[in-house]
Each structure stands twice: as structure tokens, then as C-alpha cells.
Length: 149
Image (cartoon, rainbow, N blue to C red):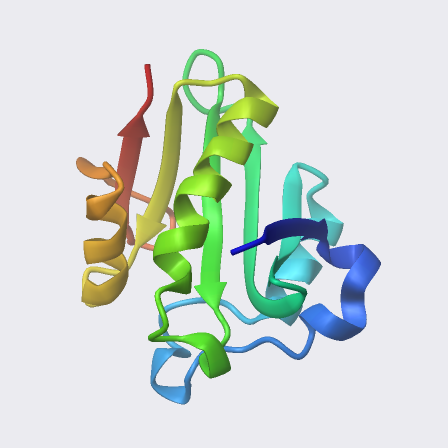
């Protein structure tokens, strides 16, 4: 499986076609909302995720310098397009994405937030070492953190 992460702004036509299933719409923002946020706050890195040259997902991550002593790196959005869900893509992509983020920022902690009702996402993140840290984000989502030595 050949996985690529590409700048979403350089592949707008492709990235704007990505979406989650209708029953997942209340668990994650749309690509349009994410891109709008990234235009407002330059810290965000929105990416198109390609597998074997197919557009299969989207993610957005960035460093919040104001949080904590040295800032916090957040995996703020991650989803697999509705047409590719249920095929194991998330399990293949997520460790590579985590590695890419950690290498880019040279940090040992990665944060994300998730709605308590989003059990599939929680299960996925827990499989890759994320643990709840007792915090809530500004949208009242549960915060999870992964430590990497």
C-alpha cells in the first residue's frame, strides 16, 4: 500500500470531493470548514491522503504554540472518505500519519480530541496508543494524548 500525504490547498478539486457518511456528519467538520480554518490560522496543515494514487482521506494537524510549555501538536481532523471506509485504510494510514507529524515537529506528544459518542474513532485511536488525559477541548470533546519516546 503506497500512502502519500499532499497539501490540500494544492489539490483543492480532489480534496473537496471527500466526505464522511451522512450519519458521521456530527462527528467531524467538513473539508470546507477545515480549509476555512486553515486559511484563518496558518498553523494548520490540511492534507489530502492518497493510497495507491486514489484520494481516500483527509487530515489536518498543527502546532498550538500557546498551549503548555512548548506548545502542543494536534491531529485535529482525520477521516476516510465514505467510499473507502471499512477497508482497513485508517489502520494503515494512521501510524504513518502519526510518524510524519512527530518527525515534522520533533515532539514526543500528540494530542487529538474526539466526541465521546464516536466509539469507532476512540477504538482506533486507543489501538495506536492514544489515552484520555482527563481534559476537554473548547468544543467539549474528550482530549486524547499519545506519548512517543
